[in-house]
Structure formats: structure tokens, C-alpha cells
Length: 359
Image 1: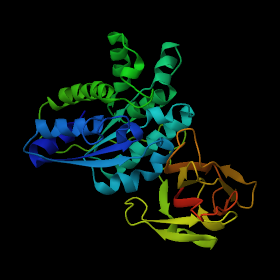
Image 2: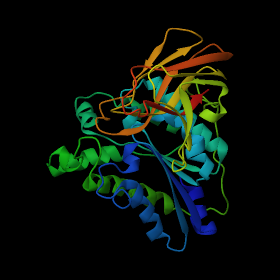
Image 3: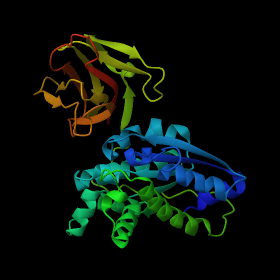
């Protein structure tokens, strides 16, 4: 399962571990995200078990995102950092999405990782929440887990269902769900400890195998999903073709490693346009309680409204993602984006577009 990880730890004495996921991978709900979430605890496990090895943690989590965004950002956020082992945790944020879409998106992520480095080991993680626990107990299907399992089986990628382990621990304890998942979605320290123990148990079994004498490339079979997006890519706004701005301006943010530059608007009605070749379009942008919505028109068609706010953004901003179109005719397309609403008296930013994802 993790032969190449074992080889790296034993022969090369170093391992680069990427944690690719949403807010649970960020460590939301933990008392200290650098110490008590599953990501920190798994890294600590490797450092303690292999004290003579150089263990590097690659942080690649963005709260509120799933595979629909992950398949675009996997190259700059994960592959660019050359991991040897990658944990992928998106099932909980994919919950409620379409089964076939999740399957395609998950397969795209796995393929991109393996094509970039066939020696990379991958583990898919399945988290849970109170909503998912209640659904499972009613007999409903956890579609995102099922879709990701289908992709994992096709590529022989191991999985760890630490959400099921947490569910079992809660029921066995007889305590309320909120003792383990305080806000019903993000685990607290107790919940993260249960999840981590489940992951470590799987790692212990895999790493107890005979040490291989060389790295063994993983096979990359033909795609199994109805559609995969090998061409999915995240394009910086500065690299857009035929970019034309009216009321938007390029803003520098050197402190932001992912998006050091973005397009910002301070006036209602501000717009920008660009051209692209492909069949799908989306944005990585700043959303929050005081951001304006956007109107997106493709090839002069009926405008699509992109909401900047959701129920989780009552008092803060974070990076959002939205896919506006899939299955467009192959060829060149023109996109026009317009800020909806009025300007503010304080002339604060109404919108920030950090990147465009295309395929």
C-alpha cells in the first residue's frame, strides 16, 4: 500500500507529506491547529517513529472547498511542492454534490498526482459530520464517499474512513456528538484524536511490511469515470488572454503565497473581460459577508449570478470557488464579469478575483 513511502523513510531518510483538503485538513475546531488536528498529529507520528528522517509537511488545505476546486488547484498547491505521500480529504465538502461529478473530479486529482510522479503514494480520507452521521443512520448513502471509493479502487489507492471510526466512537461512548464535533462539522481535539488513531493504525500496518529495494511506480490505468479533466488548470489573472478591465485594477498581495496578485473592484458596475480556449470555466475569488455578487456572461449569453456569500461566511472572508460552465463547445470563448450592486461610501473592495480555472 505504501511501499514507496517505506522506501523513502528507510533508504532516503526523508519524506515530504502533502495534506490536501478542506477545513478539517486545515484543523478547524482544534484548540491548536499546529498541534492537535489530524494533520499535525500525523506529521508528529512520522517524526516520532522515524527520528532520523527529515519529515516535511506540505500544507495544501482551503476551508469550504471540495474536489470541484481541488482538481484545478492540485498542480500549484500540491504537485509544485513534490510530495512523496499525499493525503486527500474532500468527501465531507463534496457531500451533497452529484455522484458522477465527484467521481470525475476525484479521478482527475488522482491522475494528476500520479502522472506528475508515479512513485507518489496517495491516501484518500473520509471525514464525517453530525449531518452525515444522521443520514447514514437513516440508511441514506454517503454519495461522496461512494464516488471517491470508486475512483480509489480503480487506481488501487488506499482509503481511511476515519469518519466511520469517529461515528463508532461517539456511539460507543454514549456521549453527545458535540463532545467530539463541537460545531457539528469540525472535530474538537477529542474528535481529531479518534480520527488520527484510525489513520495511524492503517499506517502502522502498511509500514510494517518488508522494505522494498527500490521505488515501484504505480500503474496508471485508463480513465474509468465518464469524464476526466487532465487539462484542468488554475490560471493567474495576469495570464488571461485579451484581458480588458473597466473599473477593476491589478492589486498586489505579496503576503499571499497562493495568489500574490488579484483583480479588485471598488465600484458597482465595474467589469472585466477575457478570452479562453476550453469547455469549462470557474473562478477562485474572495467571498464574504461584505463582498458583492458577480454577473458572469459567456459569449454574450444569459448572465450567471455568482454569490459571494454563504451560510458559513457571516462575519469573515475566505477564498471561494465557483464553476460557472461545463460542457461548453470546444473552441474560443469570451467572458465578461460585472460587479452587481452599488459602491460603498468607504470605497472598500467589493470583489477580488484571484484566479480562473479552465479545462
